[in-house]
Image 1 (cartoon, rainbow, N blue to C red):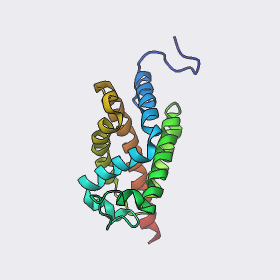
Image 2 (spheres, helix red, strand yellow):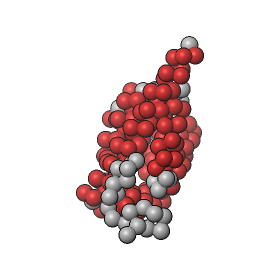
Image 3 (cartoon, rainbow, N blue to C red):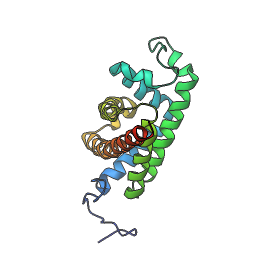
Length: 178
């Protein structure tokens, strides 16, 4: 029997995202926890990114010289704070559209195209997956179960594929204008 929205009530993977209804619910439940402390949690994610992949810092305005070890310096950086807000609002939009996979796919693709203008290579999104998997146990504390890990991994795999496609298209468009 299907749900009110016409989607299967069982745990059949969605044709577009590959996510089951149970995985979508796990993502939504854990996202609510993450979003309660969005700024702090976003800084955790980006601190891991910049520590594990220091070359990525040059992609962010005014971040190359920020001392990540100096207490509060990263968090006081206006450019960093602005990017954290944009990142979390974008992610919130993605979470809001999990039930609209075609829309979500387009949003991710468009964001990838935008990132190409800033010199972001598709591989950066590959690096962000392990960073996210490293950050989630910290920000979710005891709520990071094996099922949650699987759900987030599947979600990010879907997201990454469409972000990469968008970056690749953005790079082609930039090359055509040169």
